[in-house]
Length: 349
Image 1: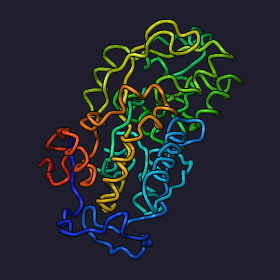
Image 2 (image 1 turned 135 degrees about the vertical axis):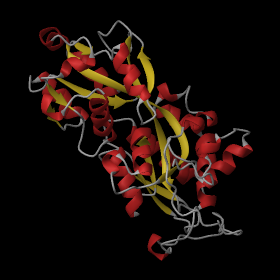
Image 3 (image 1 turned 180 degrees about the vertical axis):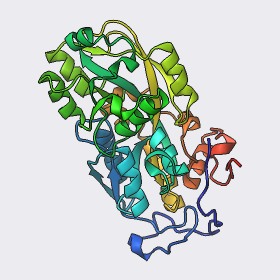
């Protein structure tokens, strides 16, 4: 993973504690406070995604955990265009915690993709669950268009996802890796609900849902329409996994969605809870600890994440782990890979 780290100024030996420190506005922090050295924020903004997605209810669970377990802390949940927008909101100081896709976080850290020439570096508190690439269409459209492998969408009307979303970033990366030019597909930038409506109204041939497995929007579409999920064939998966972005191969089990009885081979990318590098170290520790101490509240809003929502999943982080979170994982006996430690300079020459 190619990374160029932000300033790694030494963290002060003594930092404010959550219980003893009141809120300080972000604007009071200096521009170069060092990794983990910003003031504690008592009113936290959690930036998530659309209200019909998985990020938003998980943000709601985190809001409850913070409000119930951290003295003097409260949080609000913001609906956004998801990953790319969320990273920019953290970078501008308009958000404090963000749920993002790993490929978008990696692009932000390295100044590539949507962040070409304008890096926005974030650090992980936790890795949550994989987002699975679903190329969704209707059964009759799949038959008419001959959709057998993903590359067969060339020449079709295809929604890449909402503007500025991780969904869009992932889909664009898939197209680039498979050497599908934007001129070869009639691209549309629609959110999940709009994509479903466009498929139903014959205004679209297929669209991407890069979401947690068992997503309610796909399930709902499958209860009213005969749906099909386009397979990523062997060579396509191999090419995407070999590229950048941290993608892995994934199989959607048959029966996950109404009418989709066979397993579907595709790819996945991990989601992470991230903060800016300057986010207060003690506060990062307390939030990470509170989340895992009350992880049943997160599982309660996204049951398919249960197998993944454990401390050991941090090894899949797309960016370095925040110093405060490192302290939590060390206490739990979880070994963090060397290249994910915030002090490590993993820049490739």
